Length: 221
Image 1: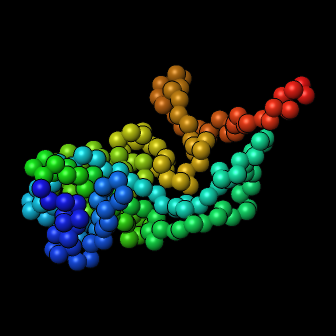
Image 2: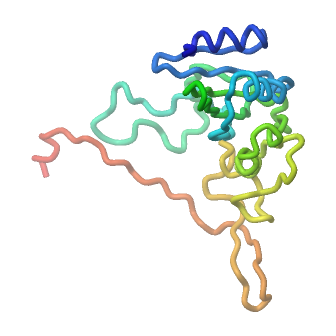
Image 3: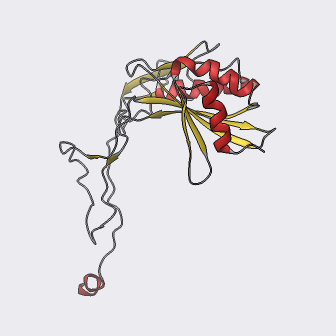
């Protein structure tokens, strides 16, 4: 049985630009350039026997590495951050080169191995990568879901349209800049006998989390 380290060597021999690493928990993740994704997908299926695509999802790295919550030294009361203090920049640990990425999980039944593939979109304004529907037929609705929720387009997809939201939905709800309260709301109007869209009327509410109180604080009551 080939090890994950050996598998990474095999992939990089065929595709030198592929980056990858085996984690401490024995998981192999590789990063493939967007222009090579379709060709690498065929190679993984036909040559390395990754015959099953288990999952595909989108990722928004726009706030990657930002630390908003202080968890190392929690206070015994109150918030650990200012909820509406958006003017103060968050601490940035690391920033991603590209905002959007497509992450695919593959399974090789023949070798009993799993592989995670990351493909970063080159254009943040119009994120797009090649579709692999002709490689793994099961990816059809996964790519539609990523298009619907993240706005990532898939070049060559046979039927790229929204999957979970309504046809008239505005925006992509899993993008990190999508407002928590949404943008529009819909309801059925019996007078017009149709569904209509209106400005959202729900007010955003922030709940106060439960905090740890010292013993003397409780006794004082």
